[in-house]
Length: 499
Image (tube, rainbow, N blue to C red; front, side, top):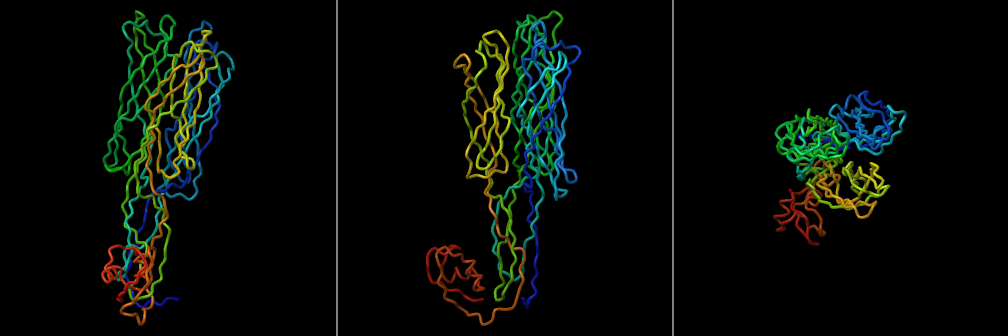
Protein backbone atom coordinates (compact mmCIF):
# COMPACT_ATOMS: atom_id res chain seq x y z
CA UNK A 1 0.00 0.00 0.00
CA UNK A 2 1.53 3.33 -1.05
CA UNK A 3 1.17 6.23 1.38
CA UNK A 4 0.78 9.60 -0.33
CA UNK A 5 2.85 12.26 1.43
CA UNK A 6 2.48 14.95 -1.23
CA UNK A 7 -0.49 16.06 -3.26
CA UNK A 8 0.38 16.54 -6.92
CA UNK A 9 -1.64 18.21 -9.63
CA UNK A 10 -2.10 16.05 -12.71
CA UNK A 11 -3.63 16.77 -16.10
CA UNK A 12 -4.80 14.00 -18.41
CA UNK A 13 -5.36 13.97 -22.15
CA UNK A 14 -6.51 11.49 -24.78
CA UNK A 15 -4.48 10.09 -27.65
CA UNK A 16 -7.27 9.92 -30.23
CA UNK A 17 -7.22 8.73 -33.83
CA UNK A 18 -9.22 6.62 -36.25
CA UNK A 19 -8.00 3.04 -36.44
CA UNK A 20 -8.89 0.16 -38.72
CA UNK A 21 -11.22 -2.04 -36.67
CA UNK A 22 -12.47 -4.35 -39.44
CA UNK A 23 -11.10 -5.48 -42.79
CA UNK A 24 -13.30 -7.99 -44.55
CA UNK A 25 -13.81 -9.49 -48.00
CA UNK A 26 -17.41 -10.28 -48.95
CA UNK A 27 -18.07 -12.73 -51.77
CA UNK A 28 -21.30 -12.06 -53.66
CA UNK A 29 -23.09 -14.27 -56.21
CA UNK A 30 -26.00 -12.94 -58.19
CA UNK A 31 -28.19 -14.39 -60.95
CA UNK A 32 -30.42 -12.22 -63.12
CA UNK A 33 -32.95 -13.05 -65.80
CA UNK A 34 -32.98 -10.29 -68.38
CA UNK A 35 -35.42 -9.60 -71.22
CA UNK A 36 -34.21 -7.47 -74.11
CA UNK A 37 -36.21 -4.37 -75.04
CA UNK A 38 -39.00 -4.67 -77.55
CA UNK A 39 -37.31 -2.43 -80.14
CA UNK A 40 -34.30 -4.81 -80.32
CA UNK A 41 -34.14 -7.87 -82.59
CA UNK A 42 -34.20 -11.43 -81.32
CA UNK A 43 -31.01 -13.08 -80.09
CA UNK A 44 -29.44 -15.38 -82.66
CA UNK A 45 -25.90 -15.62 -81.24
CA UNK A 46 -24.27 -13.91 -78.27
CA UNK A 47 -20.82 -12.47 -78.97
CA UNK A 48 -20.08 -10.93 -75.57
CA UNK A 49 -21.73 -10.77 -72.16
CA UNK A 50 -19.96 -8.81 -69.42
CA UNK A 51 -20.81 -7.63 -65.90
CA UNK A 52 -19.39 -4.68 -64.04
CA UNK A 53 -20.27 -4.15 -60.36
CA UNK A 54 -19.41 -1.02 -58.41
CA UNK A 55 -20.19 0.52 -55.01
CA UNK A 56 -22.22 3.72 -54.89
CA UNK A 57 -22.39 4.22 -51.11
CA UNK A 58 -21.08 2.72 -47.87
CA UNK A 59 -22.59 3.96 -44.61
CA UNK A 60 -22.36 2.96 -40.97
CA UNK A 61 -25.79 3.05 -39.37
CA UNK A 62 -26.30 1.82 -35.82
CA UNK A 63 -24.31 -1.44 -35.66
CA UNK A 64 -24.19 -2.18 -39.39
CA UNK A 65 -22.19 -1.25 -42.46
CA UNK A 66 -24.67 -0.85 -45.33
CA UNK A 67 -23.13 -1.18 -48.79
CA UNK A 68 -25.14 -0.24 -51.87
CA UNK A 69 -24.13 -0.56 -55.49
CA UNK A 70 -25.06 -1.46 -59.04
CA UNK A 71 -24.24 -4.17 -61.55
CA UNK A 72 -24.13 -3.16 -65.22
CA UNK A 73 -24.70 -6.00 -67.71
CA UNK A 74 -23.66 -5.43 -71.33
CA UNK A 75 -24.68 -7.76 -74.13
CA UNK A 76 -23.39 -7.77 -77.70
CA UNK A 77 -25.18 -10.24 -79.97
CA UNK A 78 -26.11 -10.87 -83.57
CA UNK A 79 -29.60 -11.21 -85.00
CA UNK A 80 -30.76 -13.70 -87.61
CA UNK A 81 -29.42 -11.47 -90.40
CA UNK A 82 -25.97 -11.43 -88.75
CA UNK A 83 -26.34 -7.78 -87.77
CA UNK A 84 -24.73 -6.87 -84.46
CA UNK A 85 -26.96 -5.56 -81.67
CA UNK A 86 -26.27 -4.18 -78.19
CA UNK A 87 -28.36 -4.43 -75.01
CA UNK A 88 -27.63 -3.25 -71.49
CA UNK A 89 -29.23 -3.81 -68.11
CA UNK A 90 -28.75 -2.28 -64.67
CA UNK A 91 -29.35 -4.08 -61.36
CA UNK A 92 -29.06 -2.80 -57.78
CA UNK A 93 -27.44 -4.71 -54.93
CA UNK A 94 -27.19 -4.11 -51.20
CA UNK A 95 -25.20 -5.83 -48.45
CA UNK A 96 -25.38 -5.39 -44.68
CA UNK A 97 -22.47 -6.31 -42.40
CA UNK A 98 -22.94 -6.45 -38.64
CA UNK A 99 -20.50 -4.31 -36.64
CA UNK A 100 -20.37 -5.09 -32.94
CA UNK A 101 -19.21 -2.41 -30.55
CA UNK A 102 -18.46 0.47 -32.93
CA UNK A 103 -19.04 4.04 -31.85
CA UNK A 104 -21.08 6.77 -33.52
CA UNK A 105 -17.78 8.05 -35.00
CA UNK A 106 -17.25 4.92 -37.11
CA UNK A 107 -17.11 5.14 -40.90
CA UNK A 108 -16.42 2.68 -43.70
CA UNK A 109 -15.25 2.37 -47.29
CA UNK A 110 -15.90 -0.41 -49.78
CA UNK A 111 -14.62 -1.34 -53.24
CA UNK A 112 -16.08 -3.95 -55.61
CA UNK A 113 -13.95 -6.29 -57.72
CA UNK A 114 -15.46 -8.30 -60.59
CA UNK A 115 -14.51 -11.98 -60.57
CA UNK A 116 -16.72 -13.99 -62.91
CA UNK A 117 -19.51 -13.66 -65.46
CA UNK A 118 -21.43 -16.31 -67.39
CA UNK A 119 -24.75 -16.56 -69.19
CA UNK A 120 -27.35 -18.99 -70.49
CA UNK A 121 -29.80 -18.23 -73.30
CA UNK A 122 -33.35 -19.03 -72.19
CA UNK A 123 -35.05 -18.05 -75.44
CA UNK A 124 -34.64 -15.50 -78.21
CA UNK A 125 -35.69 -12.67 -75.90
CA UNK A 126 -34.35 -13.73 -72.51
CA UNK A 127 -31.02 -14.67 -70.97
CA UNK A 128 -29.93 -15.84 -67.53
CA UNK A 129 -26.79 -13.99 -66.33
CA UNK A 130 -24.67 -15.16 -63.40
CA UNK A 131 -22.00 -12.91 -61.89
CA UNK A 132 -19.59 -13.18 -58.97
CA UNK A 133 -17.79 -10.24 -57.39
CA UNK A 134 -16.03 -9.33 -54.17
CA UNK A 135 -16.42 -6.33 -51.91
CA UNK A 136 -13.39 -5.25 -49.87
CA UNK A 137 -14.79 -3.54 -46.75
CA UNK A 138 -12.77 -1.46 -44.30
CA UNK A 139 -14.29 0.03 -41.15
CA UNK A 140 -12.58 2.71 -39.07
CA UNK A 141 -13.49 3.84 -35.58
CA UNK A 142 -12.21 6.43 -33.13
CA UNK A 143 -9.77 5.04 -30.57
CA UNK A 144 -8.98 7.12 -27.48
CA UNK A 145 -6.30 6.30 -24.91
CA UNK A 146 -6.13 8.27 -21.63
CA UNK A 147 -2.58 9.33 -20.70
CA UNK A 148 -0.75 11.77 -18.44
CA UNK A 149 -0.36 15.19 -20.04
CA UNK A 150 1.14 17.19 -17.14
CA UNK A 151 2.22 16.37 -13.62
CA UNK A 152 3.47 19.04 -11.20
CA UNK A 153 6.82 18.53 -9.41
CA UNK A 154 7.64 15.50 -11.54
CA UNK A 155 10.24 14.48 -14.10
CA UNK A 156 8.60 13.33 -17.30
CA UNK A 157 10.13 11.52 -20.25
CA UNK A 158 8.52 12.91 -23.41
CA UNK A 159 9.00 11.78 -26.99
CA UNK A 160 7.69 13.36 -30.19
CA UNK A 161 5.74 11.17 -32.55
CA UNK A 162 4.60 12.11 -36.06
CA UNK A 163 1.59 9.92 -36.82
CA UNK A 164 -0.86 9.42 -39.66
CA UNK A 165 -4.59 8.89 -39.21
CA UNK A 166 -7.35 8.00 -41.67
CA UNK A 167 -9.54 11.04 -41.12
CA UNK A 168 -12.41 10.12 -43.42
CA UNK A 169 -13.43 8.06 -46.42
CA UNK A 170 -16.26 8.99 -48.78
CA UNK A 171 -17.64 7.92 -52.16
CA UNK A 172 -18.48 10.72 -54.59
CA UNK A 173 -20.15 10.70 -58.00
CA UNK A 174 -19.17 12.74 -61.06
CA UNK A 175 -21.78 13.04 -63.82
CA UNK A 176 -20.95 13.88 -67.41
CA UNK A 177 -22.56 14.33 -70.83
CA UNK A 178 -20.53 14.40 -74.06
CA UNK A 179 -20.81 14.02 -77.83
CA UNK A 180 -18.39 12.33 -80.22
CA UNK A 181 -18.79 13.41 -83.85
CA UNK A 182 -17.85 11.06 -86.68
CA UNK A 183 -15.57 12.25 -89.44
CA UNK A 184 -16.95 13.64 -92.72
CA UNK A 185 -15.67 10.63 -94.67
CA UNK A 186 -17.53 8.20 -92.43
CA UNK A 187 -20.19 5.86 -93.80
CA UNK A 188 -22.68 6.87 -91.12
CA UNK A 189 -23.64 5.02 -87.99
CA UNK A 190 -26.28 2.40 -87.30
CA UNK A 191 -25.76 1.46 -83.68
CA UNK A 192 -23.15 1.22 -80.92
CA UNK A 193 -22.23 -2.42 -80.23
CA UNK A 194 -19.77 -2.01 -77.34
CA UNK A 195 -17.21 0.24 -75.71
CA UNK A 196 -14.30 0.38 -73.27
CA UNK A 197 -13.04 3.21 -71.08
CA UNK A 198 -9.92 4.58 -69.44
CA UNK A 199 -10.22 6.92 -66.45
CA UNK A 200 -7.29 8.82 -64.94
CA UNK A 201 -6.93 11.32 -62.13
CA UNK A 202 -5.12 14.38 -63.48
CA UNK A 203 -5.53 16.97 -60.71
CA UNK A 204 -6.66 17.40 -57.12
CA UNK A 205 -6.69 20.35 -54.73
CA UNK A 206 -7.80 20.51 -51.10
CA UNK A 207 -9.03 23.25 -48.79
CA UNK A 208 -10.89 23.02 -45.51
CA UNK A 209 -13.64 20.39 -45.85
CA UNK A 210 -13.50 20.44 -49.68
CA UNK A 211 -11.59 18.68 -52.43
CA UNK A 212 -11.44 19.49 -56.15
CA UNK A 213 -10.97 16.51 -58.48
CA UNK A 214 -10.27 16.60 -62.23
CA UNK A 215 -10.48 13.41 -64.28
CA UNK A 216 -9.56 12.55 -67.85
CA UNK A 217 -11.84 10.07 -69.60
CA UNK A 218 -11.20 8.18 -72.81
CA UNK A 219 -14.06 6.20 -74.38
CA UNK A 220 -13.49 3.90 -77.33
CA UNK A 221 -16.78 2.97 -78.99
CA UNK A 222 -17.38 0.11 -81.40
CA UNK A 223 -20.23 0.72 -83.84
CA UNK A 224 -21.62 -0.54 -87.11
CA UNK A 225 -21.93 1.78 -90.08
CA UNK A 226 -24.59 1.77 -92.79
CA UNK A 227 -22.70 -0.97 -94.62
CA UNK A 228 -22.90 -3.13 -91.49
CA UNK A 229 -19.14 -2.86 -91.05
CA UNK A 230 -17.55 -2.53 -87.61
CA UNK A 231 -15.77 0.76 -86.98
CA UNK A 232 -14.18 2.37 -83.96
CA UNK A 233 -13.96 5.90 -82.57
CA UNK A 234 -12.15 7.22 -79.48
CA UNK A 235 -13.40 10.31 -77.68
CA UNK A 236 -11.45 11.93 -74.83
CA UNK A 237 -12.62 14.62 -72.45
CA UNK A 238 -12.10 16.01 -68.96
CA UNK A 239 -14.59 16.35 -66.15
CA UNK A 240 -14.24 17.83 -62.66
CA UNK A 241 -16.16 18.31 -59.44
CA UNK A 242 -15.80 19.75 -55.94
CA UNK A 243 -16.76 17.40 -53.10
CA UNK A 244 -17.45 18.31 -49.50
CA UNK A 245 -15.43 16.04 -47.21
CA UNK A 246 -15.43 16.58 -43.45
CA UNK A 247 -11.96 16.61 -41.91
CA UNK A 248 -9.99 17.46 -45.03
CA UNK A 249 -7.62 20.45 -45.11
CA UNK A 250 -4.95 21.90 -47.38
CA UNK A 251 -2.27 19.68 -45.77
CA UNK A 252 -4.23 16.45 -46.05
CA UNK A 253 -2.94 13.54 -48.09
CA UNK A 254 -5.72 12.15 -50.26
CA UNK A 255 -5.86 8.82 -52.05
CA UNK A 256 -8.46 8.74 -54.80
CA UNK A 257 -9.56 5.57 -56.57
CA UNK A 258 -11.71 6.08 -59.67
CA UNK A 259 -14.30 3.59 -60.89
CA UNK A 260 -16.46 3.45 -63.96
CA UNK A 261 -20.13 3.76 -63.09
CA UNK A 262 -22.84 3.59 -65.75
CA UNK A 263 -21.72 4.70 -69.21
CA UNK A 264 -24.41 5.03 -71.87
CA UNK A 265 -23.60 5.45 -75.57
CA UNK A 266 -26.35 6.32 -78.03
CA UNK A 267 -25.89 6.50 -81.82
CA UNK A 268 -27.39 9.51 -83.61
CA UNK A 269 -27.44 9.35 -87.43
CA UNK A 270 -28.10 12.25 -89.81
CA UNK A 271 -31.00 12.30 -92.28
CA UNK A 272 -28.69 11.75 -95.27
CA UNK A 273 -27.15 8.67 -93.57
CA UNK A 274 -23.67 10.23 -93.52
CA UNK A 275 -21.47 11.11 -90.62
CA UNK A 276 -23.45 11.10 -87.36
CA UNK A 277 -22.47 11.27 -83.72
CA UNK A 278 -22.46 9.30 -80.47
CA UNK A 279 -23.96 10.73 -77.29
CA UNK A 280 -21.96 9.67 -74.24
CA UNK A 281 -23.30 10.20 -70.74
CA UNK A 282 -23.10 8.56 -67.34
CA UNK A 283 -21.15 8.76 -64.12
CA UNK A 284 -17.79 8.06 -62.49
CA UNK A 285 -17.31 7.20 -58.83
CA UNK A 286 -14.42 8.44 -56.70
CA UNK A 287 -13.44 6.66 -53.51
CA UNK A 288 -11.70 9.41 -51.49
CA UNK A 289 -9.59 8.44 -48.46
CA UNK A 290 -8.28 11.35 -46.37
CA UNK A 291 -5.08 11.05 -44.32
CA UNK A 292 -4.04 13.68 -41.79
CA UNK A 293 -0.74 13.90 -39.98
CA UNK A 294 -0.79 14.27 -36.18
CA UNK A 295 2.22 15.55 -34.24
CA UNK A 296 2.10 14.36 -30.66
CA UNK A 297 4.09 14.79 -27.47
CA UNK A 298 3.70 11.46 -25.64
CA UNK A 299 4.89 10.93 -22.05
CA UNK A 300 6.34 7.44 -21.70
CA UNK A 301 7.58 7.54 -18.09
CA UNK A 302 7.81 9.70 -15.01
CA UNK A 303 8.97 10.00 -11.42
CA UNK A 304 9.06 12.54 -8.59
CA UNK A 305 12.54 13.31 -7.28
CA UNK A 306 12.89 12.47 -3.62
CA UNK A 307 9.75 10.33 -3.52
CA UNK A 308 8.78 6.81 -4.36
CA UNK A 309 6.22 6.66 -7.16
CA UNK A 310 3.75 4.13 -8.44
CA UNK A 311 3.23 4.36 -12.21
CA UNK A 312 0.60 2.94 -14.50
CA UNK A 313 1.16 2.38 -18.19
CA UNK A 314 -0.91 1.67 -21.27
CA UNK A 315 -0.04 0.34 -24.71
CA UNK A 316 -0.57 2.67 -27.64
CA UNK A 317 -0.33 1.49 -31.26
CA UNK A 318 1.60 3.98 -33.40
CA UNK A 319 1.57 4.49 -37.16
CA UNK A 320 4.46 6.92 -37.36
CA UNK A 321 6.96 8.26 -39.89
CA UNK A 322 4.44 8.39 -42.76
CA UNK A 323 5.93 8.54 -46.24
CA UNK A 324 4.29 8.58 -49.65
CA UNK A 325 5.26 5.57 -51.73
CA UNK A 326 5.28 5.36 -55.51
CA UNK A 327 6.60 2.60 -57.75
CA UNK A 328 6.37 2.44 -61.54
CA UNK A 329 5.98 -1.09 -62.90
CA UNK A 330 6.16 -2.58 -66.39
CA UNK A 331 4.76 -6.06 -66.97
CA UNK A 332 4.34 -8.33 -69.95
CA UNK A 333 1.95 -11.27 -70.23
CA UNK A 334 0.40 -13.28 -73.04
CA UNK A 335 -3.11 -14.52 -73.76
CA UNK A 336 -4.19 -17.35 -76.05
CA UNK A 337 -7.14 -17.04 -78.40
CA UNK A 338 -9.38 -20.08 -78.85
CA UNK A 339 -9.23 -19.73 -82.66
CA UNK A 340 -6.70 -18.26 -85.10
CA UNK A 341 -6.86 -14.46 -85.18
CA UNK A 342 -7.64 -12.68 -88.41
CA UNK A 343 -8.15 -9.22 -86.88
CA UNK A 344 -8.39 -7.74 -83.39
CA UNK A 345 -11.43 -5.49 -83.29
CA UNK A 346 -10.87 -4.19 -79.77
CA UNK A 347 -8.58 -5.00 -76.84
CA UNK A 348 -8.55 -3.35 -73.44
CA UNK A 349 -6.91 -3.84 -70.04
CA UNK A 350 -8.22 -2.94 -66.57
CA UNK A 351 -6.75 -3.12 -63.07
CA UNK A 352 -9.61 -4.62 -61.11
CA UNK A 353 -7.96 -5.05 -57.70
CA UNK A 354 -5.00 -3.82 -55.65
CA UNK A 355 -4.63 -5.03 -52.06
CA UNK A 356 -2.09 -6.07 -49.44
CA UNK A 357 -2.18 -9.75 -48.49
CA UNK A 358 0.39 -10.70 -45.89
CA UNK A 359 3.79 -9.54 -47.12
CA UNK A 360 2.60 -9.22 -50.73
CA UNK A 361 0.82 -6.59 -52.76
CA UNK A 362 -1.63 -8.34 -55.09
CA UNK A 363 -2.53 -6.69 -58.39
CA UNK A 364 -5.33 -8.28 -60.43
CA UNK A 365 -5.57 -7.32 -64.10
CA UNK A 366 -8.21 -8.22 -66.64
CA UNK A 367 -7.48 -8.26 -70.38
CA UNK A 368 -10.49 -8.47 -72.71
CA UNK A 369 -10.62 -8.79 -76.47
CA UNK A 370 -13.11 -8.87 -79.33
CA UNK A 371 -11.55 -10.36 -82.45
CA UNK A 372 -12.41 -11.75 -85.85
CA UNK A 373 -11.31 -15.34 -86.35
CA UNK A 374 -9.90 -16.87 -89.51
CA UNK A 375 -13.41 -18.27 -90.07
CA UNK A 376 -14.80 -14.70 -90.14
CA UNK A 377 -16.51 -15.26 -86.79
CA UNK A 378 -16.64 -12.46 -84.22
CA UNK A 379 -15.45 -13.79 -80.83
CA UNK A 380 -14.88 -12.44 -77.33
CA UNK A 381 -12.50 -13.57 -74.61
CA UNK A 382 -11.41 -12.27 -71.23
CA UNK A 383 -8.52 -13.43 -69.03
CA UNK A 384 -7.39 -12.47 -65.54
CA UNK A 385 -3.77 -12.07 -64.54
CA UNK A 386 -2.60 -11.89 -60.91
CA UNK A 387 0.70 -10.18 -60.10
CA UNK A 388 2.46 -10.34 -56.72
CA UNK A 389 5.08 -7.98 -55.33
CA UNK A 390 7.06 -8.44 -52.13
CA UNK A 391 6.65 -5.57 -49.65
CA UNK A 392 7.46 -7.49 -46.47
CA UNK A 393 9.40 -4.58 -44.95
CA UNK A 394 6.64 -1.99 -45.35
CA UNK A 395 3.26 -1.41 -43.77
CA UNK A 396 0.66 0.57 -45.69
CA UNK A 397 -2.27 2.62 -44.44
CA UNK A 398 -3.64 2.80 -48.00
CA UNK A 399 -2.53 1.31 -51.31
CA UNK A 400 -3.77 1.63 -54.90
CA UNK A 401 -2.66 0.89 -58.47
CA UNK A 402 -3.22 3.15 -61.50
CA UNK A 403 -2.98 2.06 -65.12
CA UNK A 404 -0.79 4.33 -67.24
CA UNK A 405 -0.73 2.69 -70.68
CA UNK A 406 -0.73 -0.61 -72.55
CA UNK A 407 -0.13 -1.99 -76.02
CA UNK A 408 -0.07 -5.42 -77.62
CA UNK A 409 1.53 -7.51 -80.33
CA UNK A 410 0.26 -10.59 -82.15
CA UNK A 411 3.17 -13.06 -81.99
CA UNK A 412 1.49 -15.96 -83.77
CA UNK A 413 -1.98 -16.86 -85.07
CA UNK A 414 -3.42 -17.38 -81.55
CA UNK A 415 -1.06 -15.53 -79.16
CA UNK A 416 -1.17 -11.89 -78.09
CA UNK A 417 1.53 -10.37 -75.89
CA UNK A 418 0.34 -7.40 -73.81
CA UNK A 419 2.73 -4.78 -72.40
CA UNK A 420 1.36 -2.88 -69.42
CA UNK A 421 2.76 0.15 -67.57
CA UNK A 422 1.16 1.04 -64.25
CA UNK A 423 1.94 2.69 -60.94
CA UNK A 424 1.56 1.48 -57.35
CA UNK A 425 0.94 4.27 -54.84
CA UNK A 426 0.48 4.20 -51.10
CA UNK A 427 1.25 5.69 -47.73
CA UNK A 428 3.84 3.64 -45.84
CA UNK A 429 4.21 3.85 -42.06
CA UNK A 430 6.28 2.42 -39.24
CA UNK A 431 3.94 0.39 -37.05
CA UNK A 432 4.90 -0.34 -33.45
CA UNK A 433 3.49 -0.42 -29.90
CA UNK A 434 4.45 2.41 -27.57
CA UNK A 435 4.20 2.28 -23.78
CA UNK A 436 2.64 5.53 -22.53
CA UNK A 437 2.30 6.77 -18.97
CA UNK A 438 -1.36 6.67 -17.96
CA UNK A 439 -1.04 7.67 -14.28
CA UNK A 440 1.52 8.48 -11.60
CA UNK A 441 1.03 8.36 -7.84
CA UNK A 442 3.34 9.97 -5.28
CA UNK A 443 4.34 7.79 -2.35
CA UNK A 444 6.55 8.20 0.69
CA UNK A 445 9.74 10.22 0.59
CA UNK A 446 13.12 8.59 0.01
CA UNK A 447 15.03 8.71 3.31
CA UNK A 448 18.79 9.22 3.73
CA UNK A 449 19.36 9.85 0.03
CA UNK A 450 23.12 10.46 -0.54
CA UNK A 451 24.33 13.74 -1.99
CA UNK A 452 26.50 11.93 -4.54
CA UNK A 453 26.54 8.35 -5.79
CA UNK A 454 29.12 6.60 -7.96
CA UNK A 455 27.54 4.30 -10.48
CA UNK A 456 29.06 1.85 -12.99
CA UNK A 457 27.03 2.54 -16.13
CA UNK A 458 26.88 0.05 -18.97
CA UNK A 459 27.12 0.83 -22.67
CA UNK A 460 23.75 1.72 -24.30
CA UNK A 461 22.16 2.39 -20.90
CA UNK A 462 19.74 5.31 -20.96
CA UNK A 463 20.36 8.33 -18.75
CA UNK A 464 16.62 8.51 -18.06
CA UNK A 465 16.64 5.03 -16.49
CA UNK A 466 19.66 5.92 -14.37
CA UNK A 467 18.18 9.22 -13.19
CA UNK A 468 14.88 7.54 -12.32
CA UNK A 469 16.62 4.75 -10.43
CA UNK A 470 18.48 7.20 -8.19
CA UNK A 471 15.74 9.86 -8.11
CA UNK A 472 18.10 12.31 -9.79
CA UNK A 473 17.93 14.44 -12.95
CA UNK A 474 19.26 13.70 -16.44
CA UNK A 475 20.58 17.24 -17.02
CA UNK A 476 22.48 17.20 -13.72
CA UNK A 477 24.02 13.85 -14.61
CA UNK A 478 25.06 15.18 -18.01
CA UNK A 479 26.61 18.29 -16.43
CA UNK A 480 28.49 16.40 -13.72
CA UNK A 481 29.94 13.89 -16.17
CA UNK A 482 30.38 16.10 -19.24
CA UNK A 483 28.04 13.88 -21.28
CA UNK A 484 26.49 14.98 -24.58
CA UNK A 485 24.06 12.17 -25.36
CA UNK A 486 21.14 10.59 -23.54
CA UNK A 487 22.63 7.10 -23.97
CA UNK A 488 25.90 5.89 -22.41
CA UNK A 489 28.36 5.17 -25.22
CA UNK A 490 30.70 2.81 -23.29
CA UNK A 491 31.07 1.16 -19.88
CA UNK A 492 32.13 3.83 -17.41
CA UNK A 493 31.81 5.09 -13.83
CA UNK A 494 29.63 8.18 -13.58
CA UNK A 495 28.63 10.55 -10.78
CA UNK A 496 24.96 10.64 -9.81
CA UNK A 497 24.16 13.91 -7.97
CA UNK A 498 21.33 13.86 -5.43
CA UNK A 499 18.47 16.34 -5.43
